[in-house]
Length: 287
Ligand SMILES: [Zn+2]
Image (tube, rainbow, N blue to C red; front, side, top):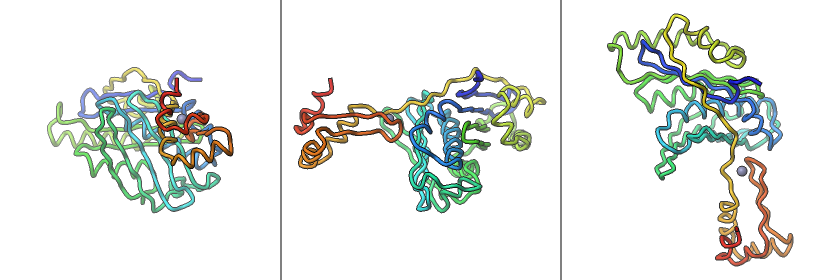
């Protein structure tokens, strides 16, 4: 076990208007993948989605969460990973979970990528792009080039055991003049282009950053932990049951003795007895 597993690390270029983030997910990824039997291709795809979700969530300026979701009518109908401002991740894929592809993103070919930003206080923002790219990193770069004024680049890798990613992002003009700014950004992107997936997955973050940016002055911030944690609860399950017609609830209780709800994302089982037949009783039976 390495100290940098399951952490996200921010870095700042002291002499350029740019910052970056480096993420490594191992145990939280295996926890996330433990509830379904996924093919190696899907494990890799979910690993890249998870690394990307954590990188994007670091842009959240308030309590909330981002959801990166892809839908397609191919073998894989859904890939979803959510990351909160506390860096709690959870995710799932649906469809033919045994599907394999040399380039995992092709399992979602012709689909759409939806990025949702939700604030705990209520506001919600959603952006959509068509998935017609060779990689998730390219799709995200196009998404950000359409929605942000500032340059954003992604490098993502996963071997199904680990997910890793690096994001570079331009900052608003502070240090550099316009001409120099473009040149600096270009140089940082070219340096980062030398990064190989096995380095992203294998090198300790500090070593990785030194290898890429040894000519630059970089401030590296302490790693922030990432955890697999589901948001399901007995209360939410009760709310979902309350949406069923009373006759349907009665039928299930008559046949099975209770109503069982299993969370697809974490495997948690919530069981409700005959008391759920009276809708106003649902909440009061929780405690
Ligand atoms: Zn759950």
